Structure formats: structure tokens, C-alpha cells
Length: 628
Image (cartoon, rainbow, N blue to C red; front, side, top):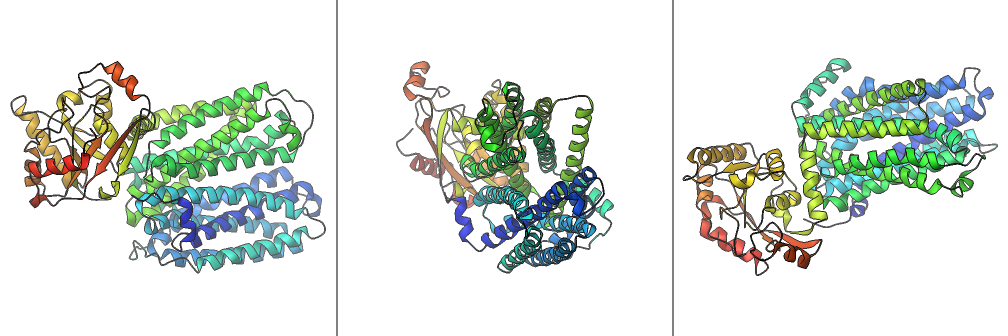
């Protein structure tokens, strides 16, 4: 598996033009929206006599509304047509919308600008399913997390820069309105030019008959996603993040003004710190995941969101400044660094939470239905954001202070996370495995790319300790069904992990012939369904660190299911606390110290008609070498 940098994708045509097109779209959305909100806030009488508070709530709502109304249709279009072509048409639509907006800017026609806000909402709705369905078509599996991280970083940076530029340009005298009118057209034109370089992306479902009834198509999309439980729960977990973020960000303006006693620049500072946190967390995912889709980061992200969300409440209580301050003045106040640190860490853990979810949805959804799945997610996101607004209003009605809203949101996040991870314990199980191989051990994978990206295969490995399965599980880019001794399967706590991983317990014919036969039936079923199955052919843990004789069970498996066999070898686990080394376990643990170095070496796939227990043992022996 290549250890490339995710930023190297920005040099490649299969990624860079699409990245810049989506970046400029997010950037332009926010230049336009922020400029409009700013001019209505500071120069309202030149534009309208309508209540400004009403317009400030109407404009964001009009931008979100198309996600509810048109996401179902946009998902079908992205599945039916070539994605580069869809992207080019969407960008042409953006140019047209900005031209209409320019007439509104120059003629002071407020309702043309409001209509353009709704138009940009339609533009974003149409582009959303294309954005996330495009990546799996052009990125390798070990690039997907990094690619999603760069996309998320670009989106949030684009939002942030757009808000800053929009607020700065529109108040520039005397050409502020003209700068916005011309600038947004030029940005849209530049985005269209980038789409001309987007490579061909074939439609996964060209024969799809489009259902123009958005309501029935939405119900059908969500019903289809429910059939794949991990994907559906990931969609809900994704939407929950937008609920969490919507409540949090909605409080920032009043939080900056009322609690921090800051001007508009303090609000911009909070937003900047949060956005950079999201970007940094998104980019960090690739390094922490080891270039694979690591959903173990999702619980890690959820834990961080709750911890630092609650700590933001505590930090707010210790802030005592009562004087009006700008951004630099706020930074000089006691407690300001703690508040900024909490907001930055919420962003970091938000990135760690959201990027693996996108990657899981992209890799485990039906490829022919991916854009429609993303469209369904967009609808759910919009509904969750509306729900967040309602919940925020209710909490304010019951006299919650803004810091108390931060605390309540953090507690709600912990409750929702526990529910999701109890319903789909694979998230928590992968988190435990990820934590193990990044704390107690330092595991290096060798030729992990030999593990097939899809399809059935049998993995065979030497058996050194009770932790073998968890180490392999944490390093594999795909879920694995482990076959293990029924006594190990019953070890407290580890048993829960093995059950969650759908491990298959096995016994010898002498101990329990029924369990042995059931195990072979379950193995055949798993391979028939295209899963990876891992066995330890020695049948028991080594007592001296040497590789024991491989039993004949592997041949019985291959007789029923002739699939490729992947030899693997663990190096460095002998002598660990949970191996059967007879020397003093505490002395061994002290001698090894924390962060023990391990390796998992993966050999090349072997055809089922050329292997034998003896040949596989010899291969594993060579892979392991002298390091036990």
C-alpha cells in the first residue's frame, strides 16, 4: 500500500480540476451570501424597508430549502449521466445565477438577489452528489480517506475565505457592490473552466428512469439505504454532525457579542479557528488511518466533540472580561486561549468524525446507487439542520444560556454516539483495535496491498498471542471474519469484540464435532458472500515462539470454497503479555516497554489448487523470518 501524501493528489488531473471546481463553488456561495447579509445588516435602508431580522433568517433558509426539494432528483441525474458533464452544466448554471445576481446588485433589486440565493442553493444541491460519488471512481482505496480529507478541508477553507472576502468587498467604498457583482461572475467562470479538465467519469446507471416525484424518490432512497445497516447508520451519524455543528455555529454571533463582549471581528476569529480545526482534522485522518478507511476514528471523533464541547462550557464560565473588545483585544483577555483551544479541538475532532463516515458510505454503498444515497444524506442533513434550529430556539425559550447550550449539545452528542455505536458496534470495535495498535503497540504493515480490495479470500497466519486477531483486524483495510479456538472466543471482554466482528468459533472433532462442522458451514457461507476469512492453521498458540505444524482444515475449507489464499506473518508478538511465553509476564512487559514494535507481513495470493498445509507453513515461516 503506497504511503503517498494526500496533497500529491492536487498535482493529478484525476483530482485537481474537480477539487478546484468544488472549492470555488463553496467559495462563491459564501462570498455572495455573506455580502448580501452584510449589506442588509449595515446598509438596510438603501435596499428595503422589510424587517432585517426576518431577512437574515429567510436567506439561509432559502439556501437550504433546495436540498430538501431537489436532492432526490440531483442524485438520479448524477447516477444517470457522466459526472464531468453534469459538473460542467452545474457550473454554467452558477454563471447564469451570478449574472442575474449582478443585475440585482447594480439595480438594487433585493428580490433578484434573494432569488439568486435560492438559485445557488439549487447549484449546491445538484453538485453535492457528484462531489462524493466522483471520488471512488478516480481514487484508489488507499487514497480515498486522504482525498475526502482534502475535499473537506477545501470546502471549509472555501467557506471561511468566502465569508471573509464577501464581508470585506461589499463594504468597500465606493465600488463594493460592483466588486461583488463582477467578482462572483468571475469566480463562477473560473470554476467552469476547471470542470473542462475533469476526466471522463462514466455513469453507473445510464439506463435509470428518472422519477421526478421528489417525495416518493426520497422515501425510496432512504428505504434502499436502510437495507445496508452500516451505511444507513453512517448516514444518520453524518447528519447528526450537521445537527451538532448547526447548533454550535448558530450561537457564535451572540456568544461573541454577549458573552465575550467582542465586536464582529471576534465572531470572525471564532469561525476562523473552527474552520481551520475542521480542515486540520480532515487532513489528519489520512495519517491516523494508515491510508485506509478506518471507521475506528469515528468514535474517537465523537468522544472529542463531547469532551471539548463540554469544556467550552466550562471555559466560558471562567471568562470575566466585561469591556468591549476587538479580536486582538479578546486574545489578550484571561481565558481567551482556552476558549479558542476548545473551539479548535471541536473542529479537529469534527474532521476526524466526518471524513471516515464519508469514506465508509462511498466504499460500502451500491456503486450504481451511490449518488442517490448521497442525495438522501443531503436531505437528511438539511432536515437535521432545521431540527437543530428548532432545538436551539426551544433551549433559548427555556432560558438556557449560550454556554449551557454548548454543554447540552455535548451531552446529547455523547448519548447519540453511544446509541449508534451500540447498534453498529463495528465502529467501537474498530476504535478499540485502532487504539491498541497506536498505543500499546506500534504496528507496521508490509505489503498490505496484497489483501484483495474486494471478493472472497482466506487469510492464513501464525498464531502467537491472544491479541493476534485484534492486531490483524486493526491493520486490514477490510472487515475480516476470524476463525478461532472456541476457548479464546469465550475470553471475557475479548469475546464481545470477537462476536461483534462476527468471528467463527471452532472446536476439534474430539471436543465438539457439531461445533466443528458448524464452523466449516459458516466459513463457506462467509466466503460465498465475498468476505475475507482468517484462520490460524496451527490450531493453538505457540508455546515456544516457533511456528507449529499447519493442520488440514485449510484444505477442507478450499474443497468447499476454492478461493485465493493469502499467507501472512506476525512479527514481534512473542514475549508480549498475552503470549504463552513462560517467563515472568511483568518482567517481559517492563522489558518491552510501551509502544512495542510489531509487523504484519502479507504475502502474495496463492491459487487454491497449488497450496497445501506444508507449503503454506513454509511460506509463513519465510515471511516471518527470525523475528518472533
